Image (cartoon, chains in turn red, blue):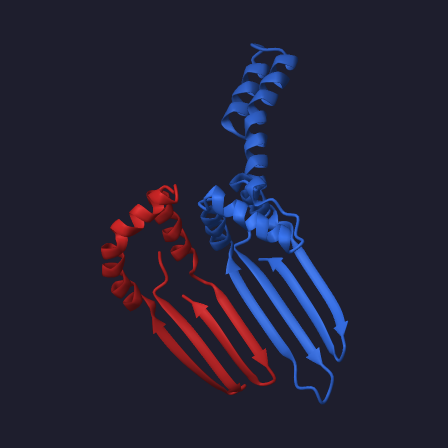
Length: 86
Length: 148
């Protein structure tokens, strides 16, 4: 399953955390028509580079699905920022 | 006691088979069960890691700011997909990357790295734990890389 939501957490003090929920599914919905429009060009580009386009699509899909549960966090003094893909 | 063993002992008691034959039959009955249990132990004994964790803790001396922490968790599945993506890189691009690496003094031949090798590398990541402690100037840095 591709990730649907990403959460960005920002904290300046330990007790105050601001969380921003990013609906990734909207981004996928916006990108889908673009991907469909660009697919013939991508297909030709893959053939020009001698890459199997179907394998390429499969790998990109695997990367998208594997992004779930990725987490990156930084903290400095009492401030911190984290990015979590759900 | 399972059904097969009971039947064998019954046959032994009735004198249909000798003690040696009974022993061989029981051993034959137990063999697949023990091998199956050892197989399942190999898969369930050590759970496969799901994530690669990188933690950096930097403690600075007083007057130079507070502690810094970096915490990154990457799914192993993402590494696997990345390896597959690297497998799609055309040979011409790899040769170009090789030339650039050699110019930078890194004697690495990317064309020799096969997807199978990288798969094997990822498989063995579960045994990986890297702990680095360093004192650089006024900063103490601790880096931990492990799978969980």
